[in-house]
Image 1: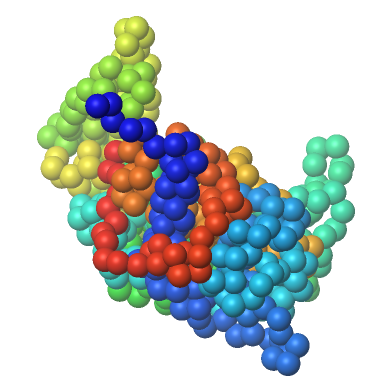
Image 2: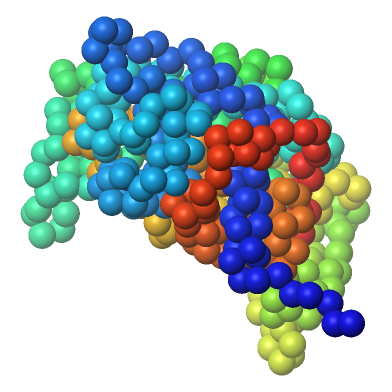
Length: 466
């Protein structure tokens, strides 16, 4: 007898249950229920006038980004008034209606941003303590933390008193709000916000604007205070190659790998060029075959040179002893076309022939992930990082931090084994996963008990290491 094939409706129902289980199961597995997840944020509202609990409102904001609704209006258009979606919401929060997008904005503008930031730090702290991403540490010890700035909002007129300004070549003044992010990155593609520093003119009487470097020093202090025992290796670009950064890392016992361009620290680079011919033993050649996942490169040869103890005197006359790695890479593609690449990294790691290529390939080369898996994903997808989710300066920061939390959960779900077990062939794209999850919320009808039981039971979550 031929094997029976499940009907389309039955298969769709099974897949939608699997999607909801992957979402709710991921959160419950690491952090518990939603009240626990958002614990610690004070509710400023009058208790006698509350319809929606604060966790319910924060979850709705989170779902806006997980399902990539695009704007607050998407909550009203896609979820509010939808029977199956509101039944699931009622099962978790005991309220029959999903809140209006304006209700989120009204409440979020009264919250303490630092308390919402602490939720991001706490959830990442849980993952760190549980060693969820421990296998991706550099040299088995150091968590890779990439720090970089990016623009979020841009306006042709002043948005608020704290806007930064820049005059363009045509004389027009641009008003904008950037942020500085510290993201924990891994070789298999995680880029998770560890902490955010908003770059803005907080002191309206200051002579100079706020900037990325000033924000870096503030962020570093906060990062050390919040994660005092975490072994960190900072991944930085050449903007941070200076005495204050070197001194800060020495005081905090942090490692660093800083990408150097040819124009960065010219005196130090001349010293490197002068001493490297006299260090014939500090060279290493590494050959890698088919390292490109799309096999555009059939063969990669890396030629390393390095020097230690290079002297550098900063603007405050402090002397620093620095180490420098140089890599010249020859890539031969499948059509025998050859391309040459050149990299340099400044570091305070002790360098040997055993670790120099690991520091480069498993450390320094991952700095780009904050751009690719981090900012580019959040900007060039339906997460819409650059969309003004609120005109209020406090509420927009809360929405920004909820986006970071949603991106964290989405990455854990997308790379986790709960989803791979249900969809062994994958769902192709993150956009497809978000769309399918939204459809499950909107269309799958489940009894309250069945919905609450989706994430019950003991299970493990393992991650794709490709």
